[in-house]
Length: 137
Image (tube, rainbow, N blue to C red):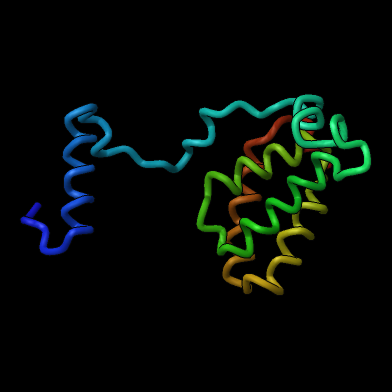
């Protein structure tokens, strides 16, 4: 790598060199599939943490996850791991494939068709990797 010409490049080079020193394998690390390291929370756990357990009049976990998916789609589905994780958790919380598809399609009005297309691809990947429960719907 050549000598950086601006402060941002210099900062990035220092960070990359530091990461290589700590763990040489990080040089070839690719984040795709990183979300597979995170287990899917149970529906009960999600409901307790972000659902109606502590806020009986609020949104349930499934609704919150669908809203999160909507927002991630509008952002252009740039956060691929987060989209796949959210889909996986939404399915566990009770969202159907139809509800996930409609949530992503609705986001096209705000984020555009390319964002919707990318999010739909990611959601399809996540649902294809799912459990037998996912194949039933």
